[in-house]
Length: 213
Ligand code: URA
Picture (spheres, rainbow, N blue to C red):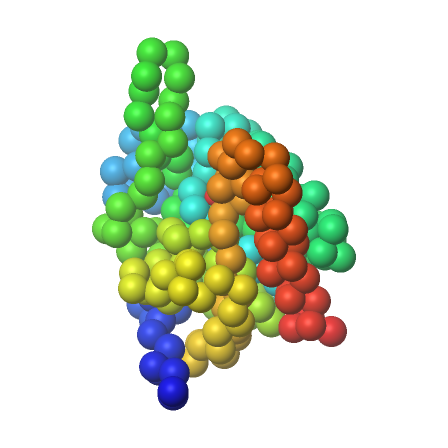
């Protein structure tokens, strides 16, 4: 059966910020008021990595630790992502890591700040920055880590489960590799299931290598 034409989400098809370096984009984004999330977050968490990175990994949004540190993937999900990248033969320091949404969205429960999912409007507004990061880096492969990243890259109707492990060639000029968000692995209670899912994640990430050889 012929595949449907690839649809692109707001980060690949919409308008985006303009600047001539990642540092300049980041500076612009520091004043971002495109949605309300900046009002409660500690700070912007912009993407990070070498300007010549050939691999861009896109997560959902910064978590509590990232919000405090001002850097992406430095908390528990980042740790498991690092380990799995390593097992897949990919060096994190050669990759650019970013998020679909650049401010932490949370609900306060007593002293705790509980992660809250960004909505479609927030994803769309923040694609202004993700689109610009991709335009600047022009990577060989973009990895969508979970549903929010996928919605920004390929639109809301592209499901993670439907496309898991696929490398989808986009008219934007680079393939998008679809996989789960690493925080999913942290939520699996059964050890056997957790090990199996982790193995699948490593297998997905190992597909990056073929794109950058
Ligand atoms: N989860 C994400 O999606 N991004 C981060 O930076 C950290 C946790």
